[in-house]
Image (cartoon, rainbow, N blue to C red; front, side):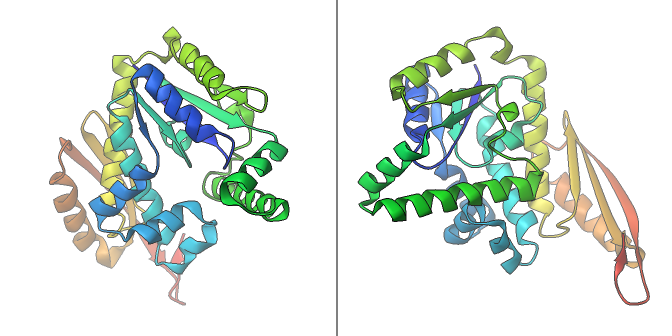
Length: 274
């Protein structure tokens, strides 16, 4: 049992490879439905969340605390679906949210730009110039997302366990490599690795639930013990603490809450420090 995340650009055949791997292993294959489920669970209009995930980071600035909210919703939806193992996820940011989970195989699919342009032209029925501009824009958009949110370039091979160049390789051959690689002992689910992803999923769920109340809240989980760190002005401490406690303690999976409230100092001009 394992989890496979596949990072790829448009028209690099990553979607087809992910589907083939899932079929060969009998795994579930998920991508866009994670966003749709997040929309339903948190009552967010689909188009807004979809654009927030896939467009440049600047779109999030149009919404109050947009960055914190949308990423929290996406992380919670994704991790909840990865908890059960036996899944292939292809799409944006999957490998960022499973840091420290040992039974995750992180794969990067790359292809020559000329091949990608040819596929874009064929599938979208556009000129070579239009195809090239579209792919260049998309690649830069995804790179901006990663750098802006995590300070990491998705093209860095050090982020992955396996990098596959598919220009002269069939989808079946690429899937064969992934299926054999994931069968290694190091990617087998263990009690400890299962606990790690359960903790991450619970922390993400709590964070997504609280983000409307306090967008800057930090959440950690350890076997049902949830720690919440938040900074508030001293005059708001009692109210915020009460709301956070009531909200978190009502969530399934939370056995105990450890709430840490720090004070934010307000300067004379109305700004807060830090």
